[in-house]
Length: 91
Image (tube, rainbow, N blue to C red; front, side):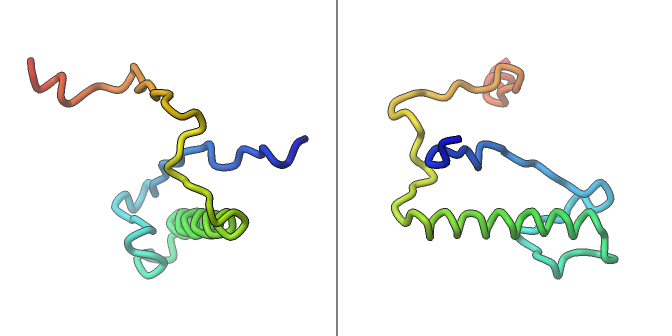
């Protein structure tokens, strides 16, 4: 494997605790976890680990730009399964 081209952050994670749907680790941190909920603790750990990963990537390559696309000028098509609120409001 060519380690110079490792794809790490290709995943988007949308996690939520089924019991505490309003818990947001980015806003509330560990202090917002109610009743030592294991799922909320795991969600917070995932968030903290993602922050650590971003810091390590920037430490490895300070010039890394997260906003830069892999191919300049290439438009990203939206998911055709997702409904548009703008189009539905014009009906």
